[in-house]
Image (tube, rainbow, N blue to C red; front, side):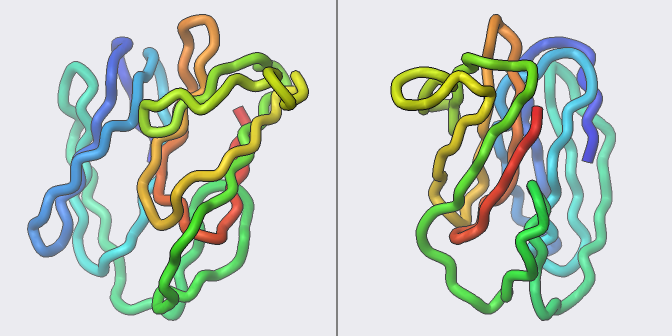
Length: 164
């Protein structure tokens, strides 16, 4: 899903589930322009999404069809189908990669994790980390006041790769 923001500021995404429950997730700080976010159709039925960044977006209606035999990871490279009946525990592996951005700070859910190219990490634009699995996370790369967020549900045992 692509979101267009018209001013710098924090972004929240609101999702109303088919049963009427509301999920609100902070996506981090965004600049002016187009922001990429992923939708995870985890529950069959109509989902209503709206984002807020110094103003409300239009509603987005998405219909998720009934029972599926598996679910596909929707971030990063194809890692194969994952059974929706399987119980997940553990972590997900994440690789952040950029050919032009180096020495960036990495934040997960608002907490500083590290800096690319510091300590034992080589200054090559690549930063590897693990996040708690089966959870929604916001990973933000920051450098010189610019932020580059990626958000979504990260499944335990899966690997994700983002290229900035």
